Length: 199
Image (cartoon, rainbow, N blue to C red; front, side):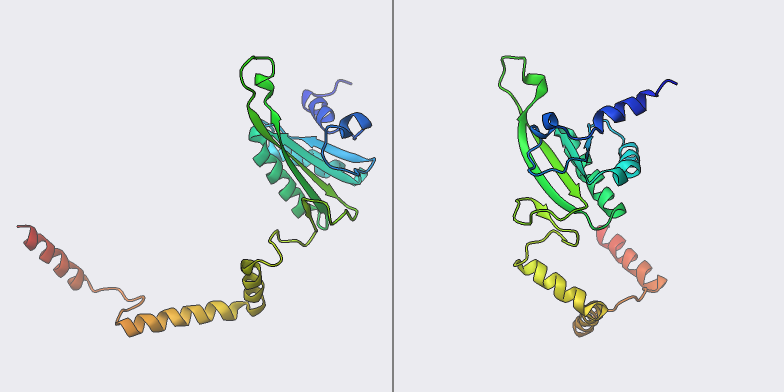
C-alpha cells in the first residue's frame, strides 16, 4: 500500500530524537523518546497539531521548532498544544542562525531567529533559563503588574463594580448624563444652529 505524500512529510518532520538530532537542539537533557515537530512557514497549524496530538501519548515530550517566519506558528502550535494537554513543563530557547538562502552567496549572511519549545510530561530543571511551569502565567514574580493582577483576581467582581460606581459618581458631579438619549427636537435644533452659523 502506498503512503500519501502528506504522511511521508510528517514522518520526516516528526521523528524521534537520536544523537545526531540532539546536537542541533540547544536544550540539554532531552528524554530518549521525544517527538520533534519542525514547523515551516507554509505548514498548516491544524495538520501539524492533529498529528502531534494523536502521537504524543507514545512519547515523553515534544519539541516544537521553526525558524524565520515560522516562529509565530511554532509559538501558536505549542500554546494550543498546551491547552489540549494540561500540566506540561516548558523550556524555550531562542537563537539566531545564518539564512540558508545566503549561505552559498558571497554576500553578508542574514541572521534569522530560530525557536525551540520543549514540552515535557516530566518535571524539568527549574533553574534552566527559559523554564516555564505548568501553572505559570508568564509574568515575573516580583513585578508590580503581577502583584496587582493577583490582587484583582482575589477581589473578583467587587473591583469592577467599584470602578463603575466611581465613574458614575464622577459623571454626576460634572453634571453629565449617562445612558440618556437626546430627544429628536434637541438634535434637530443643534443641527439647525450649525447650518445658520455657516450661512
